[in-house]
Image 1: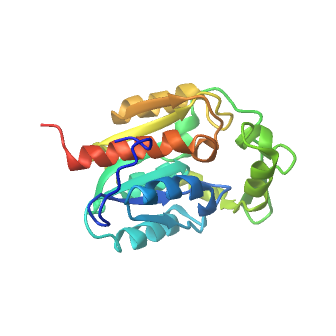
Image 2: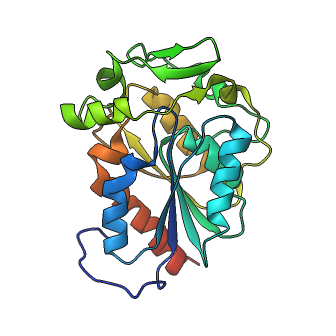
Image 3: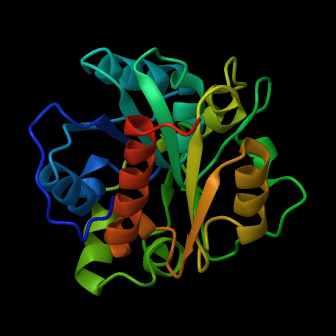
Length: 242
């Protein structure tokens, strides 16, 4: 399948898609991906993570997964990768798609995934006295969405949700990628994650990888590629390899 294919489908004939946003963002950034997938006939639901703890974000995701009827492709960006790794053991999940996303193992934390990889000095987090962090206002576009238009980058910046930084230190109890097929979209100009870290995680989980020239906001700036990757995951669910 490809987003270039204009074939339409009967509603319910394709796998469902659930989209999970990352830290410093909300679900509105998925709009272009949502439009492309719903136009093809997928039922698409967007999780709004509270970003208050790993457990809270996992609960929000599982709540949406409970609403799905039939196989579902679970997709995440950035911190959302940790969330779907934990929540993806849900019986409705048939495939995982990591879009510049973290993929820890059981007993690991999100913070541990950075160890041994290059720092990303353009990605600046300002943490308040309450322990919640925002991306720096003045450096948001440079660190998060340098290939977006100024208007789109400003909207992302001004709609960001702060995350409880303690969530990055919470250990996982499940690793859905161990039993569920995975795909990964890796942006080659990501300034939030070292590209070597993303490739390392994708290799460890056995993901089918698509690399694309994009920033960390790849879900917005390369939405066609992201949607196409999700379509390939859905196609695999419909026609599993023997």
